[in-house]
Length: 275
Image 1 (cartoon, rainbow, N blue to C red):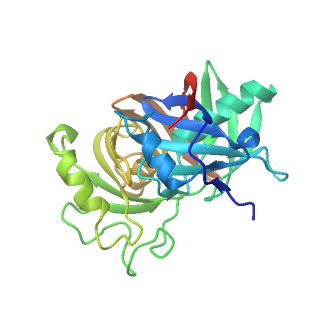
Image 2: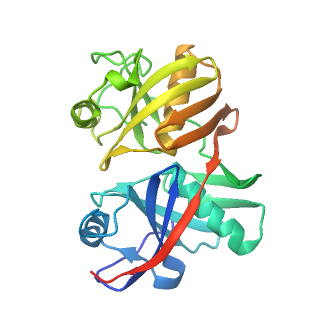
């Protein structure tokens, strides 16, 4: 298996700043740098006052099997197997760079298909959801559709673990307090992302997000996918749903071949980290 190479040096690191609906990323092209920075540098870059600031950092690596390999890190320097909006942002960059209409991108979760959806939108297949307790993973064999936690959340894996709550009004949840308590719940040995969902109709939800290792974010692709999978499993929505996040709208479509996510991306600026 192709491995990410973390280089133990502090500077310089050329980077691209991108975002999908306000879910923002630093992207390092490891095809040019030979790899990505270590966890200490990643955490320093993530600081929004003393660094660049981001929700996740992604490294693009070469591959002889697919169009590129992507490795993701949370703001605290921990690794994440999946990051949907970063995948879309990088896919848009690589589609524009190559002139291709479709791509195959390898992540620690799966090989993902990406395509130009037209009208400036980019679509990525995040792969089938993980519904088995031991693969999410959870600490014990338990019904993933009804966790024994106050609020009756759903457990889902989208390359990273998720805990989804359904509430009448998402604005009534104090996410700064609610998020970290559940991120570190003992039922999740690798911690978890936390989603708060308000169902508007069979094809629309409102979503607030607490991301593992990052905190509150304006959007999240994997969290949006997990929220729709959970809602569809509960019979609260269909499998094609408009997801309203603080940063805008994502379209999620849970098909037979995986969970497809469509939305806008932005390449904001380029820079060089000299910390």
